[in-house]
Amino acid sequence: MSLPELRKVVTYDETIMSDGGRACTLPLRMIGVAAVLSNPWHGRGFVEDLQPEIRRIAPALGKMLTDRLIALAGSGAAIEAYGKAALCGTACELEHGSALIHTLRFGNFYREAVGAKTYLGFTNSRGPANTQIQIPLMDKHDSGRRSHYLTVQFAVPDAPGHDELVVALGASTCGRPHHRIGDRYSDLKEIDRDIENPAGI
Image (cartoon, rainbow, N blue to C red; front, side, top):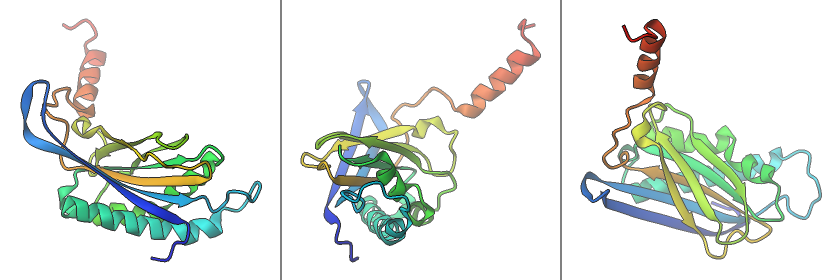
């Protein structure tokens, strides 16, 4: 991959063995991969047309980050929940980070690699070096499956620089330990019952 803006790639890997004082039935593994790159639009004033850089950079980032995350997970099948994030340096427009992750030229690499049906959860934010990157996750097949609402969180001590962007993908291998709040569909059934029988008769 030829991407002159790329400064470095950072990986994150966490395995949770117990929660709430109780051992996990399945250890929860949460992983992330982030690319730190110079902002190709920085110092050019207000750039109206972002498409040339999107077309050049987003596919390369999408493929590289997806390949590295799949390698970290062991396989696309091992990933159950997924998400993406962009973090902009303090002298960057929020639109610049958004431009690189909110395009099918970026996200489709990840979706197709894990066989996903849902959209990618996301965050766009701005901050100085060592700002926490937060990647919200959801089940790759079912957006109403609340057990897989998780957040991969990590920071890069020296990034983003004021003129840099951090673009990241995250994943988990299962849902939250001991999840027991139900899902969106059980709520809808309860609401329907309440509407049909408000007096509880």
